Length: 188
Image (tube, rainbow, N blue to C red; front, side, top):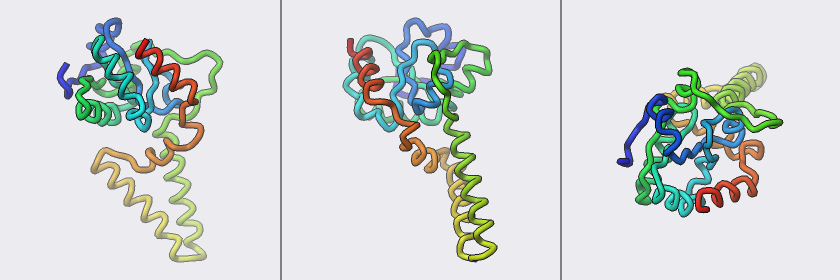
């Protein structure tokens, strides 16, 4: 596959048995439902996983997955910079589930909120805090303005700084053993 390859959900479904699927969402998002057989390597741990991903790519085609396709496209570019060829899933797991394809969830696992829901809660809370505190201290309104500016920038650049910050919270981080097990499975 070329570094910029994209597969639709239907194309990926037809080839799922021959693809190594890497889900770059947070562990919480991954636990909420992932493609069958997908391995979870959060985007901010991609550099750690490069040797294992190189090994996996040498054995077959990689498919990188996220919720919408934005983070997986970013991951594919980073992998391409390292000489690792991978495809992205167009529309991510959102398109996958909308088309009725199967997802897996770990049994007995509490499902944390998806990242977009975490971002909406954080942004809404910060805007309300700025507006309420602004009733007493005018300068507090800058908090609301700053969040609004960040949301506009996020839409224009198709990136999300708040999601990057929230992804670093403990409940969005993989357990070291989980990441180690994933890397071992890719190289074994």
